[in-house]
Image (cartoon, rainbow, N blue to C red; front, side, top):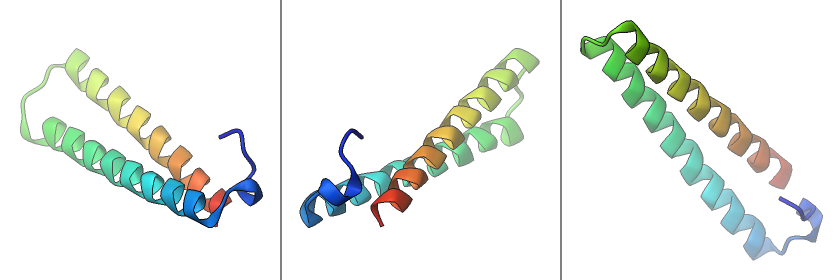
Length: 73
């Protein structure tokens, strides 16, 4: 985000916070679903590595969105 949080209107700040909340929820759901794939299905090692990598990506994205939320509060 190029703008400083102070430069945003209240409406812009609220919209960005809402979008960040949605993204965090989606990332959490994806991580849980991927964990379910590993725990409940037979996957070979390369597939498990791919699933674990995808989980790491979603965790990173979730943390980035949490950081955005903190900056806006």
